[in-house]
Image (cartoon, rainbow, N blue to C red; front, side, top):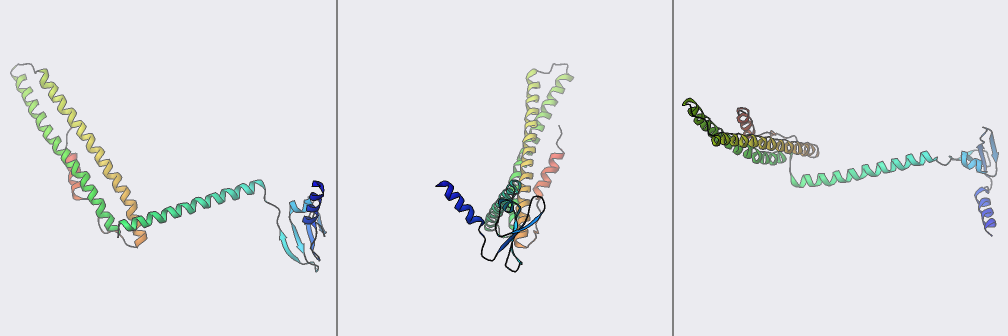
Length: 223
């Protein structure tokens, strides 16, 4: 029963359409015209001719495993690109809801920078206070040395503690500045995208006066 079904299927696949012929090339390179299609023709590809001998259809050979794999990779690549495009559209819509123009985003950036550098200015003020305390402690130690007295260990420990606090504050300031720079870079990308979406250029700077002042003060800080 199964053998009969298989034979019937093969006959169906290879049976010619009335008035049509097939032309194909054998593995040896020989061109053959026939009213049936052997397996060899299916593998190599073939042409369908009408009763006048004109080609009415060209059937290519089935794709190889490598070609199928390449098609699969290309399909996956296209799917990834489509997903990225959809995600970008969502991000663009969110961006336009949040900011009406590039300058609107710049103003938001400037507010965040003021917060960051406001913290920096406070820490710089603390450092100045500590430096004043260190200077007083050093003066006391120098006076004792001039009078031939030994500088108490407690006084030395206080100076070391103050210096350590100053170092810690300087490190915190550098971290705060790094966060400010990262915030600026994040907003820079948003602003560039808004410029493209709105067709407008920003007119405001990506820096603030408080930043310049804080950097100048930091540059004058001694070790």
